[in-house]
Image (cartoon, rainbow, N blue to C red):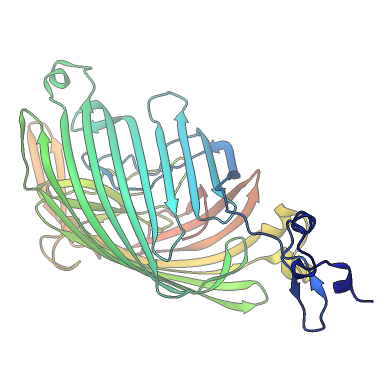
Length: 450
C-alpha cells in the first residue's frame, strides 16, 4: 500500500463531504506516484523590526556635510566636542524598506542634530529620502573681536542609487538646503549685524566602484573609487532684505583607495584624493590634522583669501603632524599610504576572541599634499604666499617664498574600546624641508582610517 491509497480523490465519490475531508489539500503526485500536501501561499504583510540601536557618547557629526564659512580663523567642522548620540534603525523581513533616525545632543544644548531617513530597496533602483537639521553654536574670532554665532542648517536629500553589478554603481543626489547664520548680540556691533539666510538647491552625480573585501576591523583588501560632480545654486537670500541671488558653486572631485594583502591580515592601504571648485561662491578646503580629531588645533597664521566669496568650508585630511589650516584654498590633492599590522593576530596565527586584542594594530604612515587658490599651487595668486601683519595703526602685507607641498610621517596604534575605534598617532610634519614640530604631534581621534 502506498500513501496515495489513503488519500481520497474527488472523482471517487460524488459526496460533497469528500470536499470537506480534503479541504486545505491540493492533490499532487510525485514521479513515484506518492501524493503530497501542497500548502497554500499567503500574502506578505510588511512588518518592521529593530536592526540596530546606538546609545553612546560621540565626538563627530551624524552627517559630515559642507558647513557654512566662518571667516577663516576657527573652523567648526567635525569637532563637536563630546556629546550624546542616539540612533535607531528598523527594516522589514525582506529588507525592502529601511527606516533610520537619530539625534545628537551637546552638553550645552545648543549644538544639536536630528536626522530621519527612509529607503526603498525593493527594486534595482534604490531610493532614499533624508531629512536633516544641524545647529552649531560657537565663539569665532574676527579681527580683534570675538563673535558668538549660531548656524542652523535644514536639508532634504533625495538619493537614487543604480547598481550595474556588484562593483559598479551610479548615485544621484538632489538637495534642498536652508542655511541661517545668526550673530549673537554680545556688543553694539553684533547687535546691528543682520541674520544671513540662504536657500540652496543642488544636484550631485557620483560614480562608485567598490571591490573591497573586509578582513577585520579597519583591515580590507581591494579597490574603492568615488568620482563625483555637483552643482549648487543659491536661489534666495535674506540679509538686509529678501532678494534673488546668483551665487552658484560647482564642485568636482575624486577619491581612490587601494588596499593589498601583505601577509595574512597585514595590509598596505593607499589613498589618493583631490577636489576643486569654481563659481561665484566658493568652498574652502582646510588641510591638516585628521577626521574626528579630539582636541583639534587650528593654525590661524595662514591667511584665508576672503575675496573668494567663500560660502562653505570643509576639511582635507589626513595630513598628520600639522594642525588644521596648514594649507587652504579652493583646490586640494592628497596622497596617503600606510602599513597596517594586526600584531596580536599575527602572533596568535589567527583572530582571537578578545575584541580589544583582536583589534590592536600598529601602523606606519606617510602622506604628501597641498591646498591652494589659483590655477596651480605655484600660481602667484595662491594665498599661501601672502601674510598679513596687523599692528595698529599699520597693516603690513608680506609676500614670501615657500614650498606649497607639505609631508607627514609617523606611526600609530589602533584599537576598539568600549564600542569605539580609537586612533592614536605620533606624527611629524615636514614643511619647506623643515620639521614643523621637533617632538612631533600626538593626535587622538575616533573612527576608521580613510
